[in-house]
Image (cartoon, rainbow, N blue to C red; front, side, top):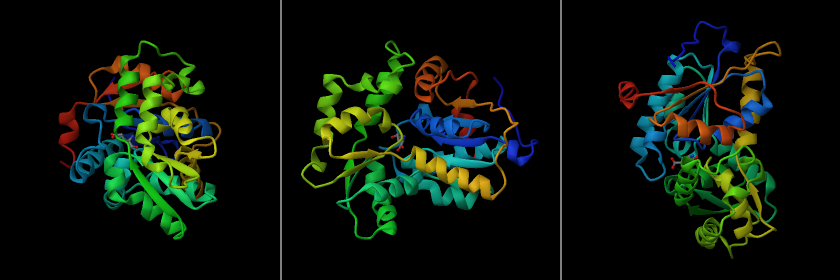
Length: 300
Ligand code: DGL
C-alpha cells in the first residue's frame, strides 16, 4: 500500500503520529485509540532495527529523527514517541527539529509512579539504555525530589515479547486481555531473576519503563509480590495528548471517522499484522512496508 500524504486535510483531521522501535508502542496506540475513538493514528514500528535498548544514544537519535521526519512528511498533527528508549535519547532533539508538538512516554510514566507510591521508593524496569540514561530518575525527582529511584535494566524482556509474538502460532485475540499468555514457567522464572535487584529495596511501585513490558505485567507482578503496584505510561501519555490537542483546538471532533495506518520496516508484514493486531486489540487493516533506505535518506 502506498504511503499517504495527509497534509491537505484540516489540521484537526490529520492523524496522530505514533512511533516505536517495534510493536511495543502499540500498547500506547491502543490506549490512544480507546480514549479517542474519532482520531486517526499513523503508527511507525522500526521492527527491522529493533531492539533500540542495546544501541548507542547516537543511533537511537538518528533513527528517531528519521521516523519523525517520515511521519511529518505524511502530515501528522502531533508525534507521540511511544518508546522510552527513544524518548530518553531523542525527545529533546525531536522537539527542536519538528514544527509539530512531540511528546514522549517518560514524563507521563514518572507522573504515574509518583502519584502511586506511598513509600516514595520506586523501581524502574526499562531497557539498558533507558536505565543508563538516568532519564526516569530525573523525571521522577523533578516531580518529587524525595522519591528514591531504583533502576533495573531489563532489555531481555524485549526479546521475550518480540520472539513470542513473532512466532505467532499461539496468538488469539484473548491474549492481551487475559495477559496469561506470558505466564509460562520460563518467563515467570526469568521475571524473578531480572527483578531480583529490586526486591528488598522497599519499593511499593514499579514503573514499566518500556512499552513492551505491559505485556509482561502478570509475571512481573507475580515476581515483585502482591503489595507492589505496577504502573505504565500508556494512559498518562494519552491524557497528556488529549490535553495538548484540546488546548490547541485540534481534536478531530465527533463526526470524524478514525482511519488507522501502520507502517513497519520489517519485511514480514504478516508477522507484524498478527502480533500487532493482538497488541492493538483490533485487526491492523492497513499496513505498509518502509524500506530502510527510504528512512536513511531522511535526516541521516
Ligand atoms: N519499546 C521500547 C521502549 O519503550 C524499547 C524496545 C527496544 O529495545 O527497542 O523502550
